Length: 436
Image (cartoon, rainbow, N blue to C red):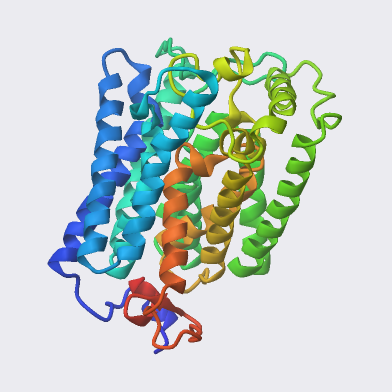
């Protein structure tokens, strides 16, 4: 069965069931709590920190609900994977506690709870309600972008004075002013969804306005790397008109960067930031790489584990300033060892694999947006491991769920069935792209 590109909004093969509506409700709740909890907005104002705690607890509840849905639908393997991902969090905290002697605090790994959403998003795909979920997410991202732009502009113009540890301080050597951290993964999803909508001739004026909004957020965030990667991706997609070509090229670039990163980590004479000059950001990363050199011989296999307590990594490194999230895959190696790097490589593969199966002009814009954000985050991971922190974690479990749904037994009528143009493997076999 081949989907008609002119009928992208045609109804799917089967109506959404009551179970499907329940799954959508839980998935939308999980996405809402993740954006609210990781946006940092609640930490900008006094008395609102409890909201982040509620979001962390809510994410765990949604993860457990997703596992329950998977068990009820007979997807025991999927449920087991989600349970294993959740169980790994306290184990990683325990490893850090054993190595450093800090008190064991299993509840301190709440930032990693989105990993448990794997089963939930797998059930979302199997129930055929991914489109409804992504449509809701797109609206949520628009609301987040609007609020981010308002707060950032108010802070820049002096209308709002924020004194929070979440604010990134000004860097007078590079000309960047104080700024609010941006959830790059969600903004990338929104930008590429709007771009796909424009290409597909859907509400051109609205699409242009949304692209301008997301571009403005990138400008206000002053994040040079993500702006460069997104611009390069947009131009590449427009030039080659093939998401498969772009995603495969990005995966090969990621593999090359991974090899280079490992070479730097295991060779104490290599530090690409030796000529860091006076840039504060570069100096901090140069210092972090030097710390990795001193630790890698002892923690290369399993890593240090997840830090707990207010001292963070100080009991391990002996210095107050050390943030693995600032040094890309070197940080993944430090926290989770070579096994963690292998898992991160799988996430990157799943992201690029999912993107390679989509068609720019055949799939609905929200799906194009989330899938094109995958290769962007894969390349950005070389500098910041976003798939294990912040907005990229939910994207990671979505990509893994898509890959698992694509290859798991029973999704296609034949294990070797190949999707035709405009269709992909999905719930119940070959399904029109509009229903995926």
